[in-house]
Length: 176
Ligand code: 5GP
Image (tube, rainbow, N blue to C red):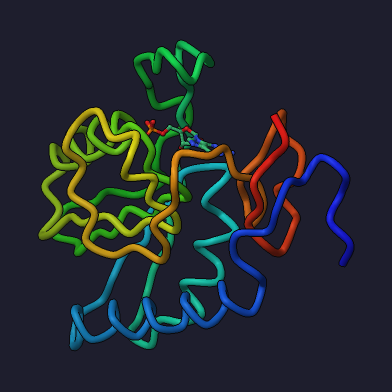
């Protein structure tokens, strides 16, 4: 597929992504062997990663979704987040894995972990597709990650720019 002109460069190809997700799926299956896992995906970006990851996990999984909205859409001043669509089911006694598309400042993950921990899960951990560690403002305990990335704005594989480019099968740096 020829990248659109707004794309500066491809960071991870479709093949690299599939191979890495397979490895992380195996890592998760081993870490939770003999148990059942609930994957929680944050709409909309992480849905693409969730469906690929779920297929790479070999233990039984359940899935549930939530949506959040940020009060600030300004990247330079990340705002407070709130849940705009809650999960359908309880987390009580479940082994829960929060599946994220990208951890940037860490503020979203910190908020979600705090909220979900209050629902009495048996365990709670984070798996992120991309980890933009250079921009971290707060500690965000990421247990599983596919790729670390530099401080660049990326799109594709679920990640958008004004709701576009989510369907690109690769991860690319935008010309901004
Ligand atoms: P946080 O800063 O709270 O860790 O991440 C907040 C959100 O910012 C992410 O869930 C994602 O929606 C968005 N975000 C951060 N970096 C990028 C990026 O490089 N590309 C895209 N498309 N979204 C990003």
